[in-house]
Length: 316
Ligand code: UDP
Ligand code: MG
Image: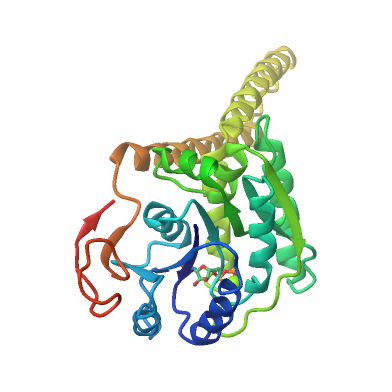
């Protein structure tokens, strides 16, 4: 069975047409499926729409207690999916549901992970294109002994073995792109054309993207700390050489030099702070998300599927 997971945050404008298109495609699959929506604290009519969708058997919804962010919403989906494999798709129709049968075909032919990879970024602004290019270069540099494929979106199918591995991961900070690459397994990248958003707005402003980028680096690699240690050593040696040289000519004017070193130290301290912050969120062991309610066809539910939302408080 395949669990199709859809994370939604304020997607009321697009959800009706998305749901219709998705269900039409899922009905053509040769395997069993369930559709699992994760409402990530939407403030519009998304929840009302989702509860209506859940009146159809095989459609369920997890309603998070607030907006936790897409990465956390995906973890909620993974935790509650009942399928052997999961497939993530965005609600805004940027990922065409019509490609799902192809992804399932690759899974059934033996692939563990099927990543959909953007063929081009022509629809992006040049700023986003350049930053994405640089970011994937940096990722490639940071990742040790594994590759982070560029331009891979969250539109992917994860088979039973990597799914079990993901569920067993104890860490709080989830950077799905990096984690999936780290897992390894038999992975296939399938090129596709990402459509423009059907309706509504993107939830990722430039600052949110920078934030996601930093989280990714922190989750993936300790290399920046090592680079900083090596650079510090280099600066220490050159400082020593500089001071000895200045003493010998008796013109010790170190203002600019000290300023440079201070800026360098400030940068290093900030970086250590970031890693410490990431460690703190692991140590705190707070749940990644909180569930407010879940509805749709649930286990142990005796009534008809999807009638009233159950309010089982659940901490994950
Ligand atoms: N999303 C979410 N929680 C968030 C932000 C986004 O569940 O805090 C969902 C959103 O509803 C959509 C998907 O994640 O289904 C991708 O978001 P978006 O289209 O805004 O990202 P973009 O495609 O612009 O990168
Ligand atoms: Mg989108």
